[in-house]
Amino acid sequence: MIEKWLSVAQQSYKILGNFKNERKKFSPKEMSDLRILHRGVYAKKNLKKGSLINKDNIYLAMPNIEGQLVAKEIGMFTKYHANKDFVKDEPFMLQNVKKDKIKEKIYLSNIIVPKDSKVEASHHYGIDKFFQTGAVLFHIINNEYSKIIVMMFEKQKYPSHYHNIKTETYLVLEGDLEIKVEKNKSVKLKKGDVYTIKKNIIHSFKTKNGVVFEEIATKYIKGDSKYLDKSIHKNRKTIINLFN
Image (cartoon, rainbow, N blue to C red; front, side, top):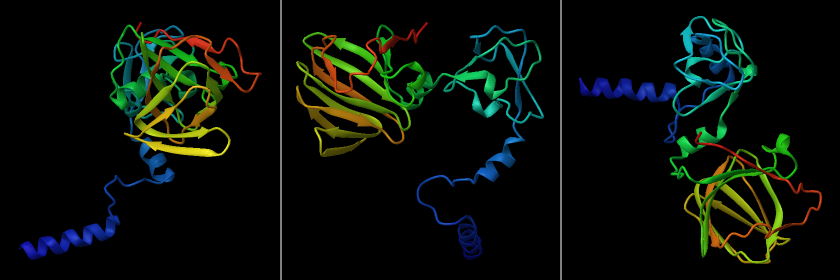
């Protein structure tokens, strides 16, 4: 009996393919075919633009419409806001909702952000280009030393700059970070890696898949970041009321 069970198990492994300690990656066609089986998200009542979409103002029903927000895409880790006014029983279409990527990444990264933290979106070439160039900065401590949590999204970059006063050390909490130091040196960091940038050293960084890292440094002083590209916006930071 055991021999028969092992034989069947071996056949199953062959059918499923080799295992590499990760979930099977489904093809876009498989994902598209499975999507029709999910329940669509509909407005339970009239909803104003900017409203948070949650269990109190939605209901789920089948079938879903092509391009509609579906049940598996909402939950405690992913928050959506309405980009327009919705009327009762109207389907939530993906083009008419906005995902709160910052809160989602906080939840999925399992990082602790104190509620009294000052949160800024740094957008060097304008808010509309934030997801190409920029970062979210969580200012945690700023006394004799400072601690900032830096969050960046997939393929996001942070431009070349230096500090006259501040020396900073990066500790990667999640994801990948590539730092360019001066003209030629490139340093690739992953979770758990630490790297220090001394004052007056030109550096920039970018991420391939997204990153969250701690910046532990000497006291943060506004205006100490000097950018090489003089076209970078002076008003390049927007305060985010994340916990309201």
